[in-house]
Length: 326
Image 1 (cartoon, one colour):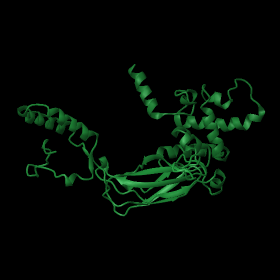
Image 2 (cartoon, helix red, strand yellow):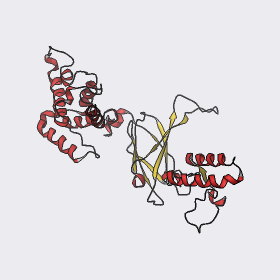
Image 3 (tube, rainbow, N blue to C red):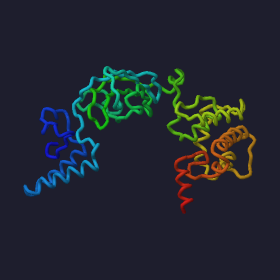
Image 4 (cartoon, rainbow, N blue to C red):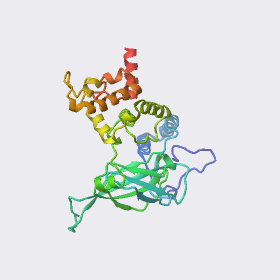
């Protein structure tokens, strides 16, 4: 920092003491800058100052707001984390801060006990394996996070910390909390059913909401709410079906490569077995809902080779632009 003259004003101190940099390390940008300085060090003394001035100007133009140091020592107190609403494959986290901050984000670390292995020191018992770190959406205002894709009847441990943008500072890790997921039967009895939203895209989730009685997603837009409510009013009580049946039909639709008629008729061209009449009506309601939400042309297609109900809005716009330019 002293060689590159990165002071904010002319009256700033000419150097930075080593004690002030304790607890920090160079990040990728800092290592890149260090290599550039080392390459300049091979020049003779007369050219060194001129090249440093050029490097300083180039860095200020291209990387002026880039941080070159990251914190390696925690300087903020640890949050207090709690685990609640445990299901068979999900668990809700909540936390409290001992020191509020107006910037930063939260990082969750998840560990799981491996039931098939033993500890390396020879003692019987499951070993603990790190399953990953997750960044919580919502920034410094977030206070809840849902763990998903967990295994039933398995023990887990979780902890959390807070980080500043570009890791200028970080908090201590919170207390570690152990919890055990429920079985599918126990979760169902407690009203915490296994969710299927992780397996469906947004268009499929909206179609399912049109034919079942589940609640609309919190992040849905007002237009999506109005459309879903319109289709529900159109079907009335005759359009309601269980969420499990609707999910199975939406997943089965991904195998149908010739649009919604192929899906409704179970792939048959002419036969209409009487025992499949109710199933055909349920599938027809999904096709009608798709036409109400996305128009009459798209459900007849298979643009993404994922069935007639797999609608990817951004991809469709990019595809339309591509064909218009062609």
